[in-house]
Length: 480
Image 1 (spheres, rainbow, N blue to C red):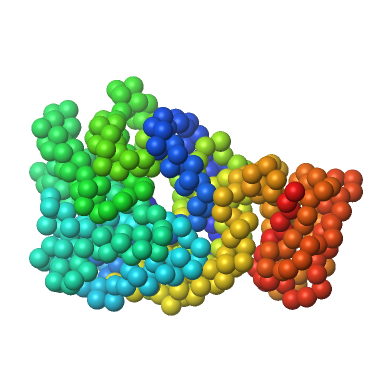
Image 2 (image 1 turned 180 degrees about the horizontal axis):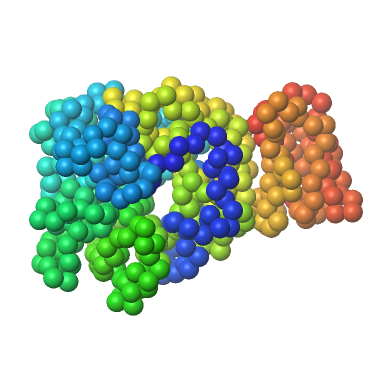
C-alpha cells in the first residue's frame, strides 16, 4: 500500500469520483467464490462492517512510508527523504532491524480499544513488500524474532501471534496481511541485477528454477501463518503485480504502459489456486483477498482510500487511513470521530465495510489521538451499532444528509448526519425510503416511540424535545 497524507474526510471523499474509483485496486470484474464454507464466511464478514488495519514494521523508526522508499521508481511515495545514494540508503534501511525494539507493545490495550470502537476484525501486516516479517518465520532471518533485532528477547517477540491472540480474546476476527512480492528475498530481487522497479528483477523464463524457489518460499511462509497462529479468518494479499499473466496480457500491458514510467511486466505466477487450497485445508472457510487480481481468489474488493458513489455489485471494503499515512509518522493529524462515523455510515449504506488503518509507533505504542478517536467512535457505536451491524444496502442509499439501511424484511434505518456545530433538528425529513404505515419509529438511545408521517413521498419524523443521544449522527429505526 502507498502513502497518502490526508487528515480530513473531505480529502478521502474527494477521491471517490467515478474516474478515480476506476483506478488502482478497484476492479469491476468480479468472479464469485464457489467454496460453500468460504461463501458462508463471506456472508458473515459482510455483517461485521467495521475493522482495524495496522501497518507496522521496522520502518516506523524513521516515520516514513512503509517499504516504498527502497523501490527505485519515480513515484511520490518512493521518495527518499535522507540519503540520495540508493545502495547506501537501502543498507541503512535494512539495518533498521538492528535497532527495532518496541518495548511499549501492548496488543491487549489495542484490542480492547478496537472492541470499544465497535470494530469486529483486525488485519495486521505480517509482512510488507520490504520482506521484514512481523512473525517468527523459519524461512528468513529478516524478522522481528531474528537475533539481529533487539526485541527478539522480549516475551512477546512473536508480534503477529500476540496480536491475533489479543484480538481473538476480545471476540474479534483476525486477518493476515501478507505481501506477495518480497524485496529482501534474493529469489525475487536477485543481487546479480539492479532493481529498477517493484517487479522481479530477472527474467523468470530464463531462470525458472530461481522463481520456483521464490514460489516455495511464499507458500511456506503463508502456510506458517495458516498453521501456527490459531484461527485465521482472512488472508489479505497485497502486491497485485505478482500474478499469473498470459503472453497476450503481457503484450497488452506493455502496449498500454506509460513510457515515462516503464516497468518490467512478467508472468509472476505463484500458483494461487494451489496455495488457496492448501490454506483452506488448514483454515476451512478462509476468506482470501488477492488484491487487484481478477479471479476467484479475490473474495472481496478493496478500494484504497476511496469510497464509491453507489452500491457495488459484489462484496467490498474501503481501506482508509486514520492518521495521514498507512505507516506511523510523527505528529499525525487523525480523522475526527464525526468524519469517521459519517464515512462509516456512508460506506455501510452502500453495502461495504470500513477497514480503518491506525499505525503503531516505533516504540510499539499507539498515539494518544488514536486512542481518543477509537474511544469517541465507540461511544457512538455503543448506542447506534444496531443500525450498522448486519445491515444491507437499500436504494437510493441516501437523501441529502440521511443514509438508508435495511435489516431483514421488517426493519429500516435512516441515519441523519449532523454537521459540526449543528443542533439536533426538531424534525427529520427525507424521501426515497418506503416505510409501511403500520411501522413503529424510534430514535436509538432514546426511550419511547416517535411520531411520524408520510405524505407525497416525504417522511417526516418528530424528534423528542430533549438532549439528543449524539452530536455526530442520529439513527432512526423503523420496524413492523
